[in-house]
Amino acid sequence: MNGGNDIFLTILLFLMCLMVFGALAGAIMSNGSSDKRTRARVNHFRARYGKSDTTTRSRSILLEQDDSSPFEAMLGRLVPRPQTFRTRLKKTGKNIQLGRYVAICGVVMIVSTLLFWLFFSLPVFLSFLLGIVSGIGLPHFIVGKMIAKRQKQFLSLFPEAIELIVRGLKSGLPINETITIVGREVADPVGTEFSRISDQVRFGKTLEDAMWQAAESLDFPDFKFFVISLAIQRETGGNLAETLSNLSNILRQRHQMKLKIRALSSEGRASAMIIGCLPFIMFAIIYAMNSDYASTFFTDPRAMIVLAGALVWMSLGGFIISKMISFEI
Image (cartoon, rainbow, N blue to C red; front, side):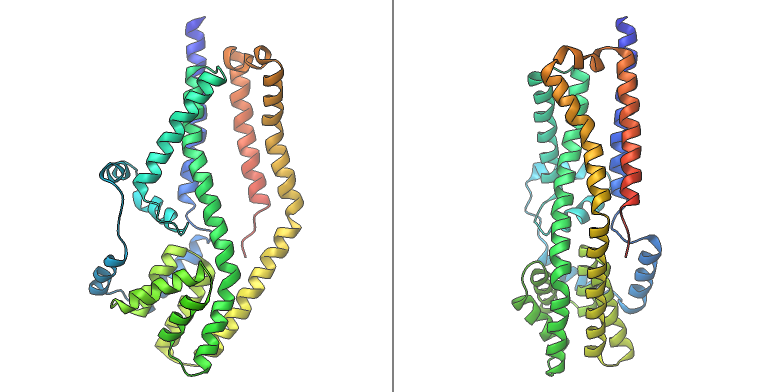
């Protein structure tokens, strides 16, 4: 019977690990909110109007310093596709090094494993599996929340920054000076990003390269529209103030449309959250009231199969609901 339990535990471990790493791979592959056609068009415009310079790129390295310890740097080298993780960490606006992030994930995994094993008396395999899920999922979730918060703040202040640039251009100031003024006058995170662009230009980098680097770091379609407008105007000429004024109006309308869609889909999002959390809440209540009864899911092979199937179907349902309530503007 022990051999049968080991087989079922191995199957359960394989299925749950497949779910975890599948979710992680999906999160990594979905890098940014725009689709492939939008990215292809942006890359086309960048290749046409944003020619990079190797000399200025080497000068900008002075603005980016890695203050991580040797141990953290060693951990960062062990991560597959490290540039993808570094790009995601940069979107938070914090100086979070990759090695430090990996070390935090390891600490969370160890603490979670010991917590599930010692305090909840779960089996070792299940405790280790839940520790892996917590170590990968919890920091990833927190970083995602930090990125979403920064994006919301940036998109709410960005039209005001464009209006400030338009007023500066109409008063006769050059575009470089207006960007410096935006960095001083507008609040974070918009002011921080424009100040970084101004510093890079001051260090010898061209304005186009600095703007495209900021666009890659932020990965906002709104900011890419702004960069493309500047690049096209420098290439073809025209009234830049009027172009940016129209762009500001378009961005405000996009933001209003997103808020309207969010309000209309609030019922679906609330229902998805309640439906997704209810089974786990009920299981926690049952486990607290009668731990022997609830622990059957971790000891009986048939119950473990049912539990694995339920988790798979719940994950599939949550994925479908998330696609139903998310809209791209």
